[in-house]
Structure formats: structure tokens, C-alpha cells
Amino acid sequence: MLRSYVPILVLIAFVVANAILMLGVSHVFSNYRRTAVKIAPYESGIPVLGDARERFSVKFYLVAMLFIVFDIEGVFMIPWAVAFQQLKGITGLLLIEMIVFIAILAAGYVYVWKRGAFQWD
Amino acid sequence: MTPELKGFLLLAVLKMLVVFTVVLVGVAMLTLMERKVSAWMQNRRGPNRVGWAGLLQPAADGVKNIVKEETFPAEANTVLFILAPAMMFIPALCLAAVIPWAAPLPVNFDWNLPLIGYVSHHGPMSMAVADLPIGFLFVLAVSSLSVYGIAIAGWSSNSKYSLLGGLRSSAQMISYEVAMGMSLVPVLLLTGNSTFTEVIRAQQQGIWFSASLTLSFFVFLVAGLAETNRLPFDLPEAESELIAGYHTEYSAMKFSLFMIGEYANMITVSAMLATLFFGGWDLPGRWDEGGTGLATLLTGVAMFLKTFFFLFFFMWIRWSLPRFRYDQLMALGWKFLIPLALTYILVVCVAVWGIENVAGITSPKVRGLILFGLNVVACYVVFFILDRGRLLSGSYRRQAPAGVRG
Image (cartoon, rainbow over all chains, first blue to last red; front, top):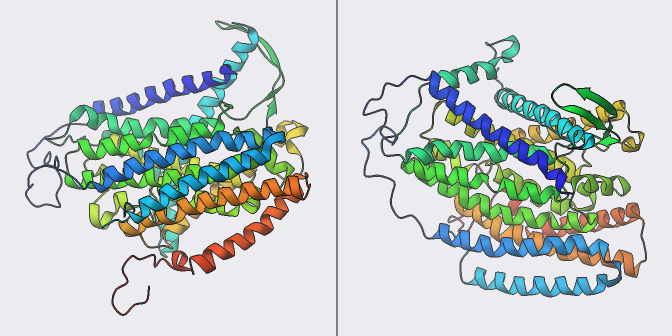
């Protein structure tokens, strides 16, 4: 069983080597004429105002947190879905389990929606 | 090491080299195809100077990107700035490894090779580089890694456009990943196994999942477009607002790596769509049991055509739909696709349970047809009663302007 993962490891090593090779070849062949204007961050041609290390909207953090919550729900569903066909004897029980699970999830979802977490402005 | 293990590894390395080369050449050809299809849809010629009908254009672009000057923005975080393209490139190219590209090919040999020694292989060889038992969990896990490349690229460039592009892109990708993961649960429900081979077999026994799980297919298609940052979801690099989004500051081969990563992701999503919902390499007739070279060839061509269709579809949609506004994009992901996918899981599991235990039907074909009928009803309810065509007409707005009815 574990044997089938070996090609993946080989592939990852191969792809990493390729990425390094491509960046390296480009580094060797390119020439450098650095000027102050060239290495300035691009801001459509106007002089640069400050830098980009500023605070950004808290909405992005909120999306990340919601993602973790809902993605973990998805992770719980996947083994359940695989087991549904294999455990023939107790499909009724599995069905009720999932209905309860999704009902709880839906309650949380409605709560988050009503609190305006999905409202983007 | 036993001769069998050596043979297995030898074949794996060979398959890996072939798939890697095909994906890289495919990416090069896709960049040309993108420009040719765009030109065709806009009634112009597209690239036609380098080689016959522009066929050598990707090679010319590649050479240009290798010898072009690399720029490092003055205030960028150099290590992360160099690392980011590689972090986009690596997961994208690892993904193609788990997809079975054709029917298994029987390979039998007993060789005594210099340096390696005795190698042997008997029986059918899977046409995926690695036929993992966790099949598409691997795809879901690894495809989400490319978020790191984009987020790091956006942040480390220390440019405002890059930062905005990176933030938008990561928020968009993680939002649609939830819907994507949930849209795959019904597929697992019907298959009972998470390997791609079993998904294809389940479709051979029943009917293609695009018919029996149409709404899953729809959610996966939309989420796939969003995951690959294609129009109408290309806000991360909306060129009229953000210049080039997270790769504004990149040039030369580093820029190329981002492009390769994006197009390789497109190939993977298309191949996933073909495998999960259109039977993969499945052809009418039981080609996998014949187990001949011809069967592998024909099924490989079938898989190629299906994947190619979706690649074309992505380009087609690019010139057919306008870009979403960011709040529309988030609303579509969180307020439409996720509840749709969740409800659909419930509908499918109740239906599967009912078909088996109440109606007592065990034939996968009949079950597929019943689910297809259910899907026709569900699609009508979702698109024409609940949504009233708003999604399709693109007017998914939060505040209607005065005088226009939303």
C-alpha cells in the first residue's frame, strides 16, 4: 500500500530540482543593470508613496477563519461518504447522523450569515 | 530490492518523465492556444510570425523569459520573493501525477539491465504516475498549497498592487475551496472509494456523474474556475485595476513559473472534471478489460479530448462572461455555492438511501437514471425558482442602482 506513495516522493524531488534549475538558468543568463527607477515598486508611473507594509482589511482574516471552520466540516464529511457504501447494514443510522450533522452546521451557517460575516463591503 | 519493486520504480520514473514533459509542453501549447482562441473570438489572427501559424511562439517566449533581465524590487523580501514562484510551480506540477490518463496497460518483462540488475513487471500497469489510495484527497490537499505561493508573492513584493492581488487571490481561493471540497462528497457517496480508478469504474457501471450528479458538476466547475483564477473570477490579476495582481513585480523566469503553475492547474482541473464527471478515459464498451495496447491508446485519446474540451471551455468562458465584482464573488462563493453543495449532499444521500432501502433497486444504471431525473428537477428549482436566473444573467448584486430592478 505505502509503495504507491514512492513515485510521488520521486516526483516531488524531480519537480523541486526543475524549479531550482529554471530559476538558476534564468539567473545565469540574465544581465543586471539596476537603476533606482527600475527597482522601485511599480505604481503606475507616479513616485512611490510609502510602502505596502500597511494594515489591510480585517475581512480577509475573517474569511480565513470561516474557511477553517467550514473546510473542517468538509473533512468530516469525506470519510462518512466513503463509509456510506461500505457499511451496508447501518445506512439508516449513517443517514440520520449526517442529517443531524448538517442541521448543526446549517444553524452555525445561518448564525454567521445573520451576523453579517459574509457581507463584503 | 526485489526485481518487482525495481520494475515498479523503473516504470514509475518513466511515467513520471512522460507526464512531466507532456504537462510542460501542454502548458506551452496552452499559452499559444489561449492567444489563438482569444484572437479567433475577437476576429483577429493572433500570433502567426514565429514558425508555421505561430507554433513556435511558446518556444520564443520561453527563450525570451530565460534571457530577460531579472528585477528585484528594492524593498522586497528577497528570499521569499524568489521562493514564491517555486511554491506555485511545485504543487501545480505534482498534481498531474495522480490522474489516470488511460486504461491500464499490461506490461510484462524480465530484464537484466546494467547497473540496476534484474527488473521485472507482470500484469496491468496503471496509467497514473502514482495510483494513490487517497486519490482526490491528494488533489484537494496539494492544490490548496498553491495559495502559499500567491500569498507570499503578493506580500514579499512590497508593492501595493501585488499585495492587493495576493490578498484577493488567497481569500478567493480558500472561499471556493470549501465549495469544491463539498461538491465532491456526493461523488464519494456514489463511489464508496476515493481512488480515481474506482470513480471511473463506478461511472462505467452506472452512468456518467455529470448526469447523475449535475449540481455537483456545476459547483465543481464554478469552483474550479475560481481556483485557477480564470475569468470571470480573475480578480487577483484584474488587469484594469491591479496591473497584473500578485505577479506585478515579477519578470523573466520567475514570472514564467507563475504562468506555468497557472496553466498546469488548469490542466489538472480540466482532467479532474473529465475524470470525476465525464467518465475519465471511459469509452463505450469495456476497454479496460481487454487490456491491450490499442485499448490504452484509444482511452488515452478519449481522456485527451475530454480534457481538451474543458480547456477550450475555460477559454471560451473567458471571452463570454464579464468579471465579477469582489463582493459578488464572495457572495457567490459563500451565500450560493456552499448552501447549494450542503443541501445537495443531503438530497443525494437521502435519495441513495431511499433508492436502495425503500425502492430496493441495486442496479447502478437504474440508480443513476433515477438520480438524473432528480437532478433535472433540482436544477429547475435552483436556477429558475430560487435563483430566478439572476446568477446566470450575472446580476448578483447587493444593492441595485436606482431605477434598475435587481
